Length: 101
Image (cartoon, rainbow, N blue to C red; front, side):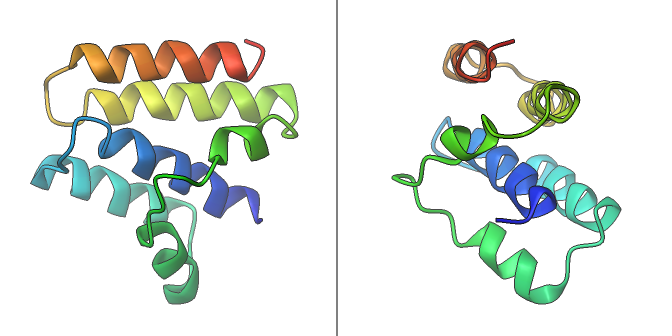
């Protein structure tokens, strides 16, 4: 999977971690997809969220600098709606550990 798409998929998984995606969170994801210049097809792949897909496992293969960028984006995504739920915090911790950071 393209690294840009993978990053956005991880963010999308974070944004639905608490069971819903607010307007601010949707805007954050849209901004990420815009900044990474995803095509319409790539955006559709990001938005076809499969909760059983292990996107973190795929991210382990990324270089360390890119894994750190993923974690930074996850933190920003978790804070996109102005609230950090306990579940989102735990997910950030879990992903950070899973990525070996």
